Image (cartoon, rainbow, N blue to C red; front, side):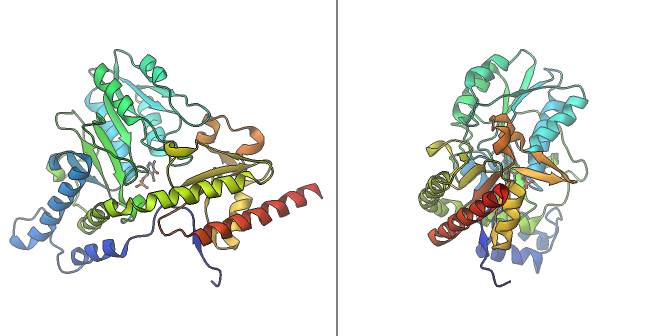
Length: 384
Ligand SMILES: *Cc1c(COP(=O)(O)O)cnc(C)c1O
């Protein structure tokens, strides 16, 4: 392809850091022993797991034995929700979450509802914020779990984990957070924030795909999701993906020096938002300022189709995401944009552009120029 490629879909996945790849190679080649084996050859893999568990625990202010490796964010979230629901159902069968969670959460909760659990999905305001009074009012005697994401993957809204955690602690309710978009951006000290379970996925912060972890506070009762050979201290069976976990460890280690890129990213984000809002018939989805993820731009174009915008951007070498998904011929609107009340004439014309630390000002200017000409062309076609 001769087009220069501009990747603006970092909320979907991120490019793997070459250092991560290097950290994985030994476990894909010479150090192939099964970490559960007893002979000394298997020790290298086992040591890699121990090291990464310690790195993850240090980042969260947790203990290494509270970290369980999973196949990614979806598994961690499913395990947290189903495991807590199943393991604590004698205490109660009521779960609280929000209307704007990732599908991993929403669909797992729908599954639990079919099993007789009761789920309350809290509404959010027009910027995606949750009101703490709503949460306080929703907590009942039989509420066992509250699950609120740390930051929204579509519109970038950041949630007040500390206040939510304090409320849950006060009421004796277990608190899980989907921190997949927040890792490396927000401080996630589980002690300060009163978090009991926290889900992470490596491919959202320059690690490999198909690996993540669940933090489970010591003493929390959780049922297993996977049964088998009793790996991960009997809680998550299946031979560990040692190479991917080693790669995740390197990606976790690199997070501290990636923080420096966040303020530059925030500037580019705001520049992009301001310029797009100068175009006719546009609106911003999600909040402005410090309570928005530094890399998230989500805008809607009145009476345009997000899918058309995406296809045209793709032809120009720009990769982004829309707020709607075209499934089997019909357009399914984003549950997040619906929950924040985006009007009918805007909701289908939404576009999510998520920046990365390698995103340059030049790329931002190119995409802005493209959007200017593209939307003008699409609008003039509509009029004629
Ligand atoms: C990507 C994402 C997930 C799913 O993680 P996978 O590792 O891709 O399964 C869950 N929650 C949020 C907020 C995400 O952005």
